[in-house]
Image 1 (cartoon, one colour):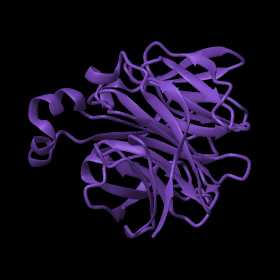
Image 2 (cartoon, rainbow, N blue to C red; image 1 turned 180 degrees about the horizontal axis):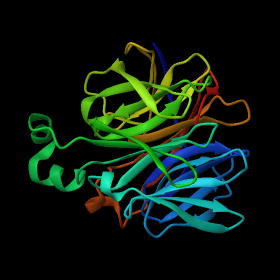
Image 3 (cartoon, helix red, strand yellow; image 1 turned 90 degrees about the horizontal axis):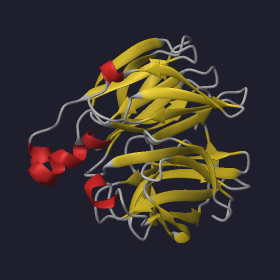
Image 4 (cartoon, rainbow, N blue to C red; image 1 turned 180 degrees about the vertical axis):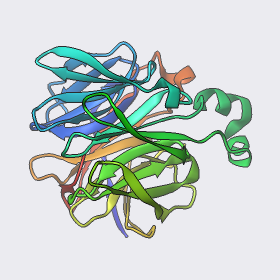
Length: 296
């Protein structure tokens, strides 16, 4: 197994999520600074690209340069083009709690998940062991288009989180955080999903934000408290590399000029009752051997 150690590029984030490499910069959402930001490759020159009072999460762009993003608290998908924000979809009826990560394919079909339940409140009431002993409600992935139409609702997902699409556009892989697994689907010609299967079953790995590399392996953030690592996972579940971070990792993205810098969002915790009024989040990074591939 290959091992790396991340270095800190920048500090002062609330809770970074949805990192995306776009137009030579790292873009990301910050839940508790209520905005979509970007930074240069070395972590400098932070810019507020767009304010989102209702907490942004997943981000992606269509081929015409339009940014689509998740607004968490009100369960909407919004677009941003030429500085004009438009709400294109309210999918509240399919959400158990906050909306979460999202990606889109090359045809502009989007795939968005949600928490399914109030994770922070249940953790305070039951603790982690209690949640494992009494699994919380499952929830849905919503498949939508840029016209704001829901094409499909995929049920029985255990906290769907980071989502990637293979370079050929034929497979979507999503992390199910509460089930410690990565789940794959075929992407049909109309963008809907079929042939659900386990891509990798992991052992107490709380799969969070993730990205694909050019060898078809997935880098994922392991959000288990105290683990402080991202993992490189092969289909079937073999862990082939790790990156050690200074605090818990929650999302990662390959980027940089050659696509082989792994950018990692870290924070002391994801508990909003503890961190929402703090800015202890970081972007950390490590240079790895294999560059990015696929979407996002």
